[in-house]
Amino acid sequence: VHSLRKIFLLLLQCKAFISNRIESLQPSKTKQDFRPFPSKDISAVIAVQGIHFKSDESLQPSKTKQDFRPFPSKDISGQYCRMHRHSQTTTLLMSSSLVAQQLVRTAFGVALANKISSRGLKRNSLNKNGATAAFWVSSIAASSSVRTAIALIMFYLTGSKLTSVGYSRKKTFEEDYSEEGSRGASQVLACSLIGTSLALLRRVLVGVDGPLAWGESSIACLGNRLTLACVAFFACCAGDTWASELGILSKHPPRLVLAPWKSVPPGTNGAVSWVGLAASAAGGLCMGLTYGLFMISNTALREIAALAWIGTLGGLGGSLLDSILGSTIQATYYDTESNMIVKRSSATTRREGVAFLSNEAVNFVSTAGTAALGALW
Image 1 (cartoon, helix red, strand yellow):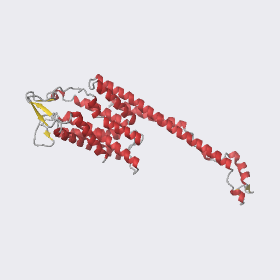
Image 2 (cartoon, one colour; image 1 turned 90 degrees about the vertical axis):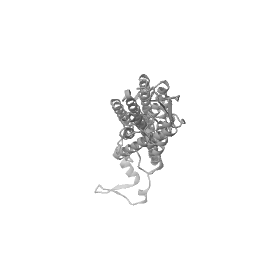
Image 3 (tube, helix red, strand yellow; image 1 turned 180 degrees about the vertical axis):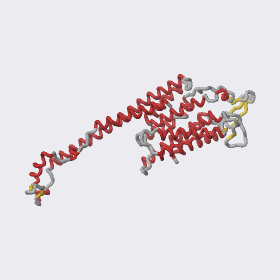
Image 4 (cartoon, one colour; image 1 turned 120 degrees about the vertical axis):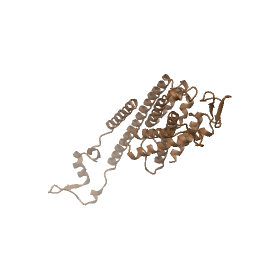
């Protein structure tokens, strides 16, 4: 939390610096900028236009055809040139500011990605391939959307912390259970590739990440759908991770999601418990609030509530979808001698489900489906 607070304050300082820089480069808009002629030239203009003064010093134009002649063409062309040059200067300043903001965002993303991958490799929560994948994914995510980068950090930190909760009990349920849980490139990409691609797609097609646009334009609708899909994706990832790490510690044995009357050993793919379901909803809510609260603008309460609701549904629904896939097309091997979940079949193991997809493939399919449903909300 302290690290996220530092990052958020740094982003606010960067935004304030860029805004002040843009204001200092833009010309000041005073009343003199909009006067067609300087005050000292009024008499000359009046003389040219045939305007006369009366004795009461009131300005009254003479009603002749000469009074209604337009200004000389050379003055109009000069004024148009000045306006055109001013428009070009403003456009150039705006383009330069956008480039500067993107450079700052990219530099921040690379530094953040290097920190995350180095920390994971040092703590053995990532192997070399996983650290490399985490670096590239985090760099692209932070360069495209600050909220996506913060969601990645939140998912990574909470997942790592929950892995160590109840470690003494968890290692009695599963074979080769690690407290840090060293993750490879396939595991990293399964829980980040789609979300990062959605953030990059929104940045290219719509523009800089911003609040939900409640208008009816096609661009606003596309931006909303990509944002909701990204929230649903990370909600599904967090919901499944939280359910797996906390649901296994339930005092009551879990039950198969498609056969709730059947109790199975803790750690079985496709098994659910009330503790796991509550944890999945909480994980999705965490991701939704992350997207709503870490928007660097005046985010309305309406948007925060909407993203929190989408996150909760994405976490709970995505976890259930993952459990359905795990109970049908993913195999679970239970060793009757050691009473543990093992990774491979042997003469003493009992199998649940069909060995069609791996755990990473199931995670990829469930997160993709949840993101698609979130986009269609």
